[in-house]
Image (cartoon, rainbow, N blue to C red; front, side, top):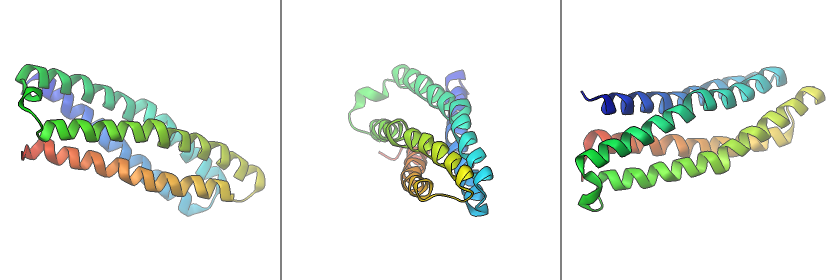
Length: 153
């Protein structure tokens, strides 16, 4: 196995693993209804994104481009790799443009929930939007993972 492939698989592990794990812990915190627990979870989701999701994204991008250039796969027209790149770009745009701002909003509103002594409606609203867009940004990389393994077209 080449070093680029190992780096690519490791990047996918960090990227997709953190997306799923962060969602799990955030949902578990929300279920408690405890504003302190929810606030800490919201903060930790953001920290985990910077510690794991972002490095995974960088590793995936750098190693993926390296392997695509090495094999010439991008020169063969619209294929599994081209579609994967489009889906990866959409995932990144959703993460940067929607999820990160929603996470900041959840942190801010969860702090207000602590002060109010109960989970506030603005937190619940941000959390619902985060769940919708988070599901999309989780499913897209799963589809990409399928294309990367199957190389079906």
